[in-house]
Length: 187
Image 1 (cartoon, rainbow, N blue to C red):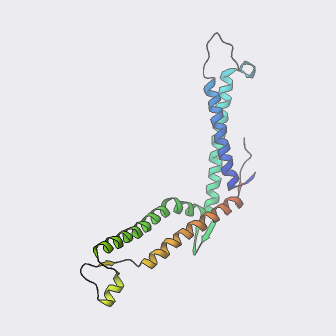
Image 2: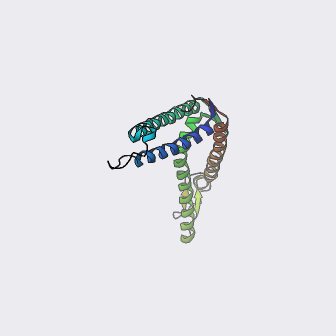
Image 3: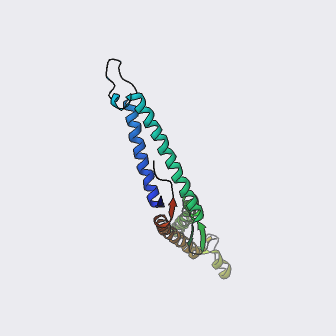
């Protein structure tokens, strides 16, 4: 049975809903008073119905594992190029989850710190100079602030990171919709 990654992810959601319903069913028939008739008697009794439903839950959980394993294989095998960098889908997903947020926060923090420095310097009557400008001109006063980061490069880095993330999301969506997985038929 061939599915796209998108279809497989949707199947996992459906399976989880089915498992939830089966667990609710089981909870409803855990016990009864001796004097009451077993409402599932025609289906083999509550004991047998619970056993079947628990086995069904186990089978569905195994299906989730099978789907996730196939998705992981596809993610490891499928390459995506964003900008000048080519990584597997698995690597890009890890980068987006574990690396990119730290980079975004770090670059935004630098930008915010420099903005705050400019505001503070303006209030105090000091100048803010780039390290390069202060060395070449020699006009820096002891009260001036020297910025040790190229702000134009910082701006390009922030923009490049946002472009990578945007392009990556598009590429991941495309691959999820087109990469096929081979799975056994659902139970």
